[in-house]
Image 1 (tube, helix red, strand yellow):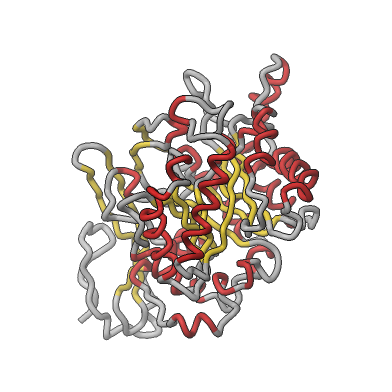
Image 2 (image 1 turned 120 degrees about the horizontal axis):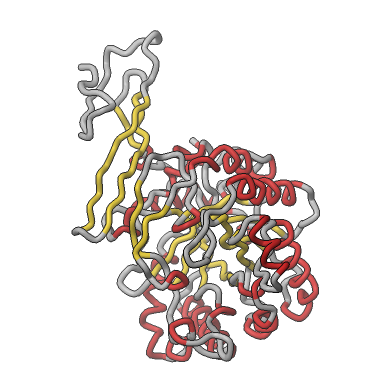
Amino acid sequence: MPYQGNCDDDTKTWSRMEDATESTPPRRCPLKLKLIASGVASVTLVSAVYVTLGGPFIQASELKDNASPADLATNSVQPNMRPGLKPSQGLWRGTTHWPPSMAGLPEENYDPLDFKNEFGVPAHIYRSFKSPGGEALTDGESGFVKKGGILWYGFQPTDWKEAASSTFEAQLKKYAKVVQDVAPAQVMVAPGWEPDGHAAPLATGQELFGTTDDYKAFYANTVKVFKDMGVSNAIFIVDFSQKCLIDSSYCDVIPEIFPSDGSVGWLFFNIFQTADKKMYENQVKHNNAHANWDSVAQLDEFYNLFTSHQSEMGIGSIPWGLGAWGTLCQNKATPPAPLNPEDRKTFISNLGAAFASGKYPKMKAEIYFDSLYDIITPYDVTITGKGDIAHNNAVATYPTSSELVGTYEDFLNLNIFTGNDAGYHAKR
């Protein structure tokens, strides 16, 4: 019986469309899900639903991979089976994505396989954030790994000294077991993130997690626990904040806090556009400049910094990447002012041109922070939820910046990324 209903329905009802013919093209209509979080926040999510000739309507998030771990082990084409998780050419494209759970709906998690539905190309890396009690992978994350995607598995204890002690080992074993269970697929494991911004003496208050030595001890403890449990599919990584570009004092923390024992397999750092060109020039005029408005200027600062310290830090032979990058829709003034959309587009396009130029051979991945004030989506959504620690965990409503979608899609379709899509199960 043909599908009964229309695209205005908010119901999720479909049946086989057995009378479809070649003259009846597959239909695509949005499935609107109104998600309410006990009066705290809400998200209206529009997800694409498809019907194929002679088949059922299928949600992208319901597509399951038939590949077994054994299949993945013999297929080095899949991103998570590449040696050291290094791309065969160019860079990996990745995302941190706003989830309905950001609005207080933990049972409704983002499915990384839906990235292709939203932007037309698959994500190679999905960055996840784990915590005690939330160690397990979501169904979407498990499906993403089965399709060959690289999972960034990060956890952030806020007391490094405790995390370096035996009292934290039970928790580390829980994290290790989750990673071990998806073997032979490799996983990027991040013991904390942005440690340079959480170390004494510069960090204070809720931002202070310990000393540089405390962090390195916590990192070493994590590596040891994973090794003792026989975890062989973890690639350990370090991810630095943008603070070095705002205050040069943080640049001195980076080589001091980096574990130089050879355990780090990837180096990541972050860049964000927090001002447009006019705002930045005004900051310079008043000797109050923060990070440059242009992405290439920020990339250059970090690339030159790490190049000058690569021998000391032992990072000459490992790949580098952007662990989080984005363009904010507004600055951090009181009250905040919106950034010029054309300058935001330039931030994205200039970064793509820089990567494609071949001038940054160490760069092997980028992960867009598609959350909070950096959200870019073509979906007609309203997202209201709690921010992160950098935003004082405040509840806010975040614009979708749909005017940037075309520029972002052009970036995602650069050859430096698409060259890694061939044979990738998540592309199907």
